[in-house]
Length: 319
Length: 262
Image (tube, rainbow over all chains, first blue to last red; front, side, top):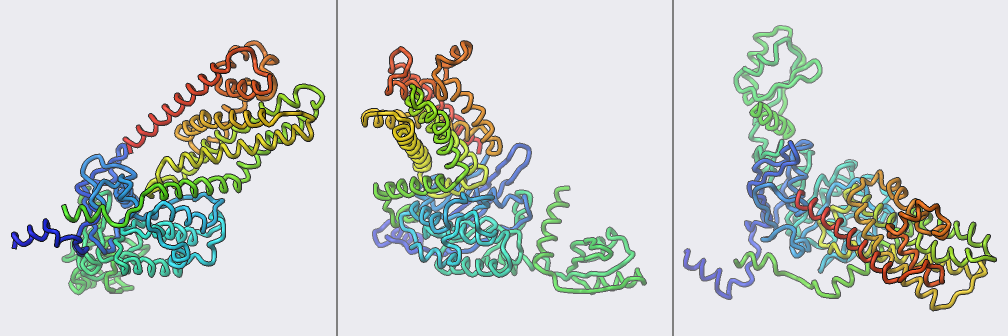
């Protein structure tokens, strides 16, 4: 086996090698990045393989944008290494195959959407046709408007257009649907799925769990610069496979947390919300100990709960 | 090895045509953007024109109608570069736009060159406007040679003040930009003979004047029309060249240091 592998790797027959699904296109390896006193990323590793959509999920300040900026070569790590498409991300050649959508507070307002895209297309050796970009990002209705006149959602779509206009192999989308209404958010999801279908590798950051759930082959949960867990959305939900119990009770939340299989207890106005692996056992105990208990609901844990439980775990582990 | 080679190969056509295209579009859109940004284009174009209408045409029977053409041209190029580059880059940096451009394969040189050329083009429009006003309303006669030489000096003058604008963009936060630039540019204009010959300035100011880059630019422009002070023009060229090196060197140092820290 190893002998044949050597032959195919070195012989002329191995050229060109087809893109395999497992090929790593971008990699953060044990990266630490500090800004003054705060550690934005702490010994964080991430690998993107060809053709997959990865969601980097975490609350604000978790280090998602720092990870993207490292992969784009905009900043360099204090320790660890960054490789993109087999090279340093600062390399101009690598950049011609990368598209990026960053959080931009304002764009130069006095250029039309069409003009901005025409300009960005010129940066890439093999860009998509202008009409194609307008169609993909759904810019038809405002392509001739000045950037300064766009609504928040339109601006995001235009920025998406800039990210894909160079026909890149690797696309970074930092909070792509921020400021979008439900309808345009869904429309952008379709476009991200289309990118994936076309074989592009996509890394998106989001704090919308639904978004990660809908789009990603793999979700990487991050908080306070540390990796919490990664896997498919089903795998992450399994991490907290239990149910959520909501009720109004006089029992002390600290006591409830000690009940068997309870993962998390949160106060929600007058009620408590309990996440538990085996809700039956917990409910039995609750009813036994508090006759005034009322307003009882038991529901399936959402990805949101899993996420909450995970980020809470890491917070309490640090304390 | 093989996978690495694949990763870097693929369709590549980063030849001269590719760079020429980027350069052309970047410059075109930069100029269009500046033109459409009324706060920039109206003030940068409007002030020299308005000043000339006020002070040039009212002096049509003495030397001032002629003197103010080159001196206001200098004012035009200095303001175009300081506001266009200084404010332009500072704003795009603050808004995160520059970062998006840096993440793209855009060559950095194209970004800077496009801004410099656009500002220089603005300065040339100002020169043309002032010459037209001078000839029509100011009653001034000039030769084609004088007009061309003035355009040349103004173009050369765009380099030192582009470098200064770049340094301002790196040092001054965007919100403070207009104030800081006006604080630098208005006193310098006054003290360098943009508004009246330096001979008319108070003595203490005339001591400082030779230290200002704007003074050397003004002398070069005024020399074409015979209004410069005695002395070799070479000194003024040298002073501007030195100032350009100083400003761009400082800007380069600050930029590389901030990049190393990033």
